[in-house]
Length: 147
Image (cartoon, rainbow, N blue to C red; front, side, top):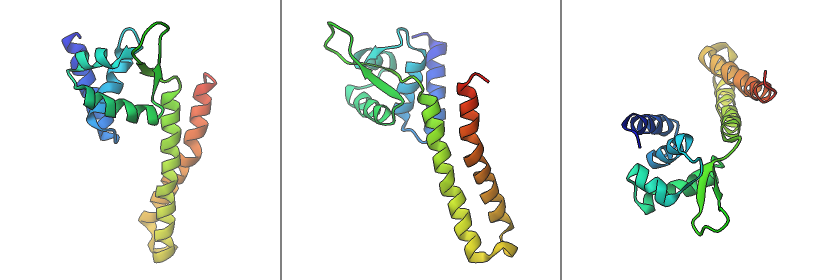
């Protein structure tokens, strides 16, 4: 792999790690975003990323379970191949939008305890997360429609 592309993969893996993915899963996902061909075997990924079979296996299982990566099989080949799943980013953002409701709900619980009059910071939290909870699905729909 080109050294500049390898650095990009590592930088992107750190970004994914900051978002909650284990580092190896982030490395695999980043690599699959730029790999040619788009479908890669575990062996090919291991060679490109200098990663062990065990580390790859766990990362691929997680990414498959999260529906970010899909497992494929080419006719005549015995090895599974992996690729970024179509629509993965939309699904990931919708999942994040659902998680936003937990923050809103927690702010509401806090407001119930301290009261609206004393809950300025909690109201701000509740309003912000309620806004994103409402609007993010609409934005994703507009994106899907090409607008």
